[in-house]
Length: 556
Image 1 (cartoon, rainbow, N blue to C red):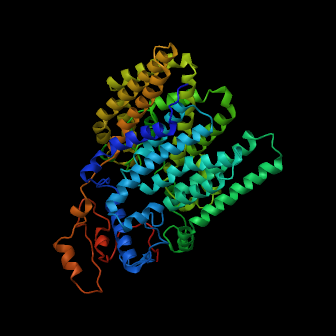
Image 2 (spheres, rainbow, N blue to C red):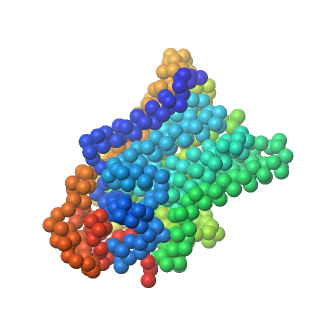
Image 3 (cartoon, rainbow, N blue to C red):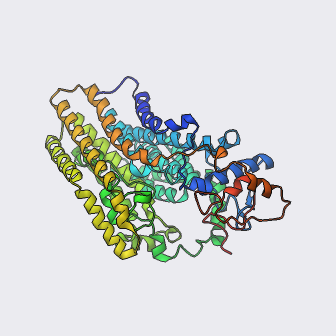
């Protein structure tokens, strides 16, 4: 099996390639924020105001007087206040830091997954495939569309946490424990709910390593290492305590103190069953104006990649990794059930048993764990191809690719979406049929593109098997095919806007007039500033508003 002389450097180059292609508009001074994103509604204003007042006070502001009559700045949560890269906002423009954060963490997500697979003794090509499959998986790659950089920070920490556990519990090296503490802290400082899922997945993976990877060690040693791992998790909480403790103290005063509108509220924005075909068919459920599902709003993708799913299925049959496959598959299934929310009876038990779940919503965000598990299996599948295993599967891939392509060009998938949309419209009253019709061309070309990518993947594997393709060429072309398929899906969700300081967040006659008014006063924003009828653009100018947009304001 091929491995370059500088394996990590070349792998990093491949992870950077796709991020660079997606980031080209940044070179023109564009800002990675769509008009419908949380960056426009609140993210930019929160961060610009926080950086300005940090400079004025000499420390992070603790109170935000600009919204709803005031609310705690740290405790209520205003984004990545203490995340390490947040300090760049003290010396660089907010939009520059947002752009850098997105690019950096996509590369890190791929690199951490690569390192994890290498520690699991997967080949170089397999590790690269796994890294790309996670970095560019639909949910991860579409985070820029809703402006959810905090979710990206925490999602990138999941493979890092798994890597730390392998080093600590299986390889018995001390550096795994501080690395685990770092991963936990980064996830907590990035996004609490993503961190919640990360901690559960990490705990289950730690059990796998303790029970399955070192069964010959005395039980006392294994339990001791598990205790040290728990200590590392607690240390991670300690590192993030500057954000965690104020948040915990604030919960009784927040709108979610009594839970989030019962079971129905907690299961809002789960992954509906009608979205499931999108796991393998690009754009099937649509997004923004072409979204036809029951959630009312969808700014992301759930595409895992048709070639990636095929590779994962092949990896799941790796006999020499049977125990790992079972645990990885079990983790993927668990978090798929969480993501489906009220779509299965399981979530009723989860909601009743698991602490703090009643205070959350959008269980669909747990799908990032599914994406990592599929990526790990795909890496194992790519390694099996290098070993020239799975010949019958390659024939099946070609057949599946042909069927998918035929169904795509004949409009079957588009008709399926319209049929599902009709059921949604009948049940909810939403105008989803028109949205599904608008999505028809995207469904057609998305499915056809995935089929072509799967056929090329099978062709490459057959050529390598028959020695018509050198191991080096196979190791280069396979990641390019898989990456291109995922990139074609991701590029629709990297939407750019002009420099905010020259566009929505530039001073004008209105802000100048208000700023010239002596305090005390509060402005009533009646949706003067497009494109959002709600938001807090005035906060960026240090103008207090009567109302605002936050979601975790004081409930009194």
